[in-house]
Length: 81
Image (cartoon, rainbow, N blue to C red):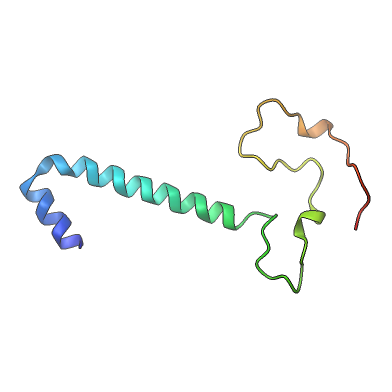
């Protein structure tokens, strides 16, 4: 597949930026999926820690960007389990 891509790029140099943006987009999407899979609220082993989100601090920022919420002033509501 790579050989075919290089052959097309040699014949049609206008495809080179398209291949670069395609590889860049696929790489960014893969890195984002890895970031989501390694989050502290994701459970991969249910026997050792079935509810990892209970150990998170109430000021933990779940979103990538929080525009209007001030997480530092939040109080923890509810009991610890």
